[in-house]
Image (cartoon, rainbow, N blue to C red; front, top):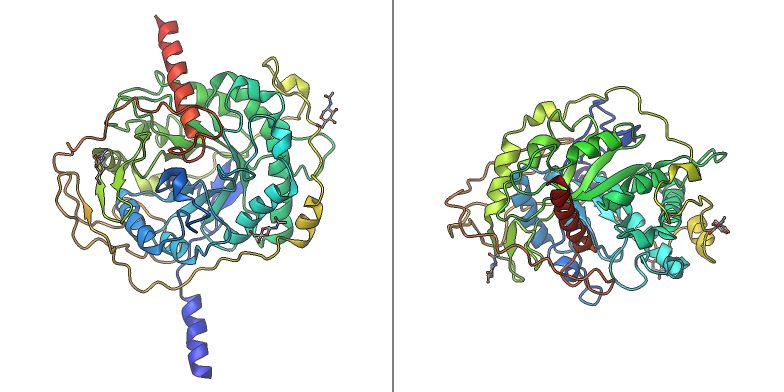
Length: 485
Ligand SMILES: *[C@@H]1O[C@H](CO)[C@@H](O)[C@H](O)[C@H]1NC(C)=O
Ligand SMILES: *[C@@H]1O[C@H](CO)[C@@H](O)[C@H](O)[C@H]1NC(C)=O
Ligand SMILES: *[C@@H]1O[C@H](CO)[C@@H](O)[C@H](O)[C@H]1NC(C)=O
């Protein structure tokens, strides 16, 4: 008996784990090496928002067989992080997280969902800020805070989605950021960064950035200041360039950022198939001093046509041509150099919050944040009850159970996750399963079907309201083109 439990305990400590990362100034840092971490990420929400279904007790990190399939494919691709939009804190995520951890991938997690009462709303935001909403966001923190590969939490995604929503939303998003940070400070062993994922509504982008990253005067702790700022941007389309895509304006605008900046979504899908030439710019000297990388939208093919893998409900899947194009672009990067960049100096201090920072008419310039709703202080004080709890577990079988085909119809043989060593982050080549790049001609679907409306209820095919950003980016792209002529 004794012997056996001693062995079990040993086994538990032998599970290889990624090094938890930290934010230092405007970088993600590996505290062991002092190196900056560049996010090479993938948006991961199989099934779209329907992949999160409280009635069916499922979310994207609850089915280990599916996670094994996807971690193997993402490992082959070369990504080192996933973004997951909609999670159910009451499900068990241990196996899936252990799989992604062993595959060398960090997780950036949204604490919200499209279900009623599970996110701040863009319209009449004050009606969506109450204790049981916050309780859910804290429960997501509880469920994931103990995993070493939890990299960050998003306090909101595109809640500011058009100019009209800038009047009241900013102070509420900043308040939720504050509440999450207070919760983490009180209940988590390590400081996990919290920040906002913004739609690239360029007109209000700089006010949004300043509103969330400025420092409240006289507030020593300043718990409401974002630890990072992330952008969902679709302005690089097709065979574009650093300047044509206006990514140069982003670098210029963010260059004195006090916090890490990265794309929380990118990958314009018009024209399609995609060629992903932005990878060279994002991870090259054009951008890597200012941007900590980015997250490609998105892994699975959904009705909005952004996928790189076409999966079936039952489990078998087929790679799409975009998968190979992206892989080819990653393969051109010098990953070991990219992941051993050092901070370029100390980060600029945050600017002081003041109405002077706000340049757009109608954008909230009041930095007095909403006070906690009734009942919430007690939850922060005592913790969520009952507390969901996550831990890494041992995985013994790394084989993928489902058949996965190349775009040309050939079956990928011996597909499996290759568990990496302690602290080893995934990179292209870690898992060199033989794909057959083939003709890559099975088409990635037609473009232009991203016609969802931007209303709150219509998120069937839309993980977290991201259709809005793409439509806006398209509109802005057209405006920019017209302006250029
Ligand atoms: C808070 O969250 C936990 C975990 O999801 C849940 O069990 C509990 O019912 C929630 N409490 C309230 C007051 O909403
Ligand atoms: C600023 O916002 C706070 C909290 O919402 C509110 O109490 C206050 O009246 C607002 N001040 C102005 C000048 O609008
Ligand atoms: C995805 O696979 C289904 C069959 O499972 C097929 O009907 C559909 O056309 C495929 N979609 C794309 C974009 O290849």
